[in-house]
Image (cartoon, rainbow, N blue to C red):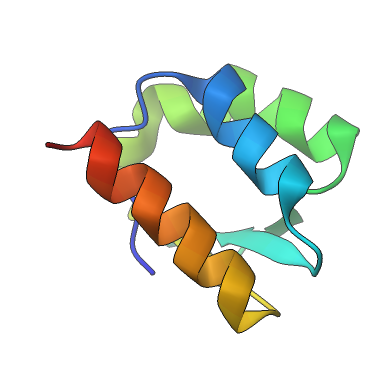
Length: 79
């Protein structure tokens, strides 16, 4: 799932923390970050989400229900 326009990163990570499986952020450069890791969350907040339009970010979730939860969150935020 391609992601864009995450304005409230803290709230987004609350949703990620609620996920049961692995949630990863893929960048256009081929980086793969485990968003369930607090260290990766911190690094991505500081660096990646501030430039999300330039980086072509995608999310991958190991569980279908987690992907649905994230999709619903992003759909509501972008209305």
